[in-house]
Image 1 (cartoon, one colour):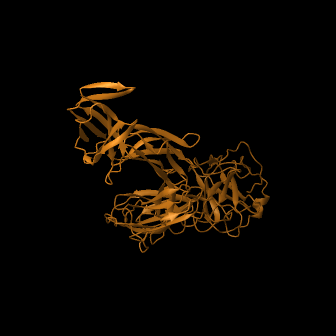
Image 2 (cartoon, helix red, strand yellow):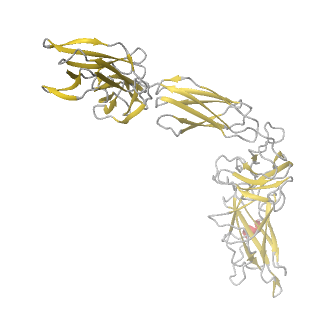
Length: 586
């Protein structure tokens, strides 16, 4: 009852046995004709049957592969006293084997047909079905193609970062009720025995399709499943109750073969986690380092050990990055040690801040260390337009800045004798490197130019001190009139009066000395008559001297006061006041 013509079609099948039987000679020689009027068998709806270009994958239903069983519907089981038979013809696509199977029709909707065709792992097969009435065959169903995968996939490996397996080092990082992800991975679905290259003839493998898993029992019928990705990986996330649990996982290929024994991952979920250990960071770094040269900061966290893959975060702040810039994380060794390497491009203070974010057994901790990175020197100079000034004069002050990298700002300060240092001006120097300002000077003042430094040049300063004379203000009193000799104003005194010269010092010099000098004009010149001793200035910084005029009728005089600074007050230079002129009348 064999037929040589193969047609494509869909029919369900079951695989059974591993007995290889030779085809009967009579069946091969059967030359019964095809009767187009004879109905073709029907195929069970939902049959898993592939095409020639895309065969379906099938796995064995038992441990032997001696043959296959398919189900077909045989039309009109008995017609005019003749009983129809359902005939299934099957063959190995590589042309090596073929076989037939048949069954008499019955009133049942579908009949099973056993075909004694041995099935080999990795081979591709096809079959079709016809109705036979003893003298002719119906048109055959379209061929059904399938590939045989009799090899189970490699058993998966289960890993989890939160719950170490029982007997392994480490402690749980999560507690009861907290979600945790369990990862599965398998090295795949092996090729048939003797095959070295997938896809070669008769060397097919269906490939890992999904994982099936169960908690605290091996996976059974309708077990939960997750798909396997192209790398043979999958995962499941669960929040588990307190206690010891076992996750069982099997890998299943596209032909339905499951790995021979499930992977068993046994672990303990604690009721709650212990409080994290207090943690410290000990940092070691050079105090100074050269710019653009690699330096190393080493450190160690307390409360070791630490799990593999842990790291500390590093942020460096410097003049160019005051808010900080992240450096690569530094991996932790099991004993908590780590190393940070850096090539600082910015001079000055480079501060390295190290943070360990903490875990279930270690607290978060942060520590910092600072390295002073070398910078080049630049020139700063401070000049004034004079070395000494009259009281209240305006001094012109000029600061100069030499070569720098990315900073061209100077600041100019003034600090008067006995006073506080104040900022006069800050700004960018001009194209000649200069920054100028002015200052009203009333006492000895130190002017300072300051460069704050930049990314590659160190801070620099220069200072210059300018002196100021005190101001002596004078006035005569006791006169009764005024007159002029030439262009000079003279005060006129009666010979019975006394001339009084009043002197006031600025700034206030209370407790300091002034002395008075008197000159008389005769013989065509001025001649000193008297120079007084120290006259102490009162709290208002004033002093005076009086002159008797009884014997000086018709004489011309002039008088002045001199401030003489003491060793205790060097804020101003010694200063003479201007001459005050007077004459005496009868």
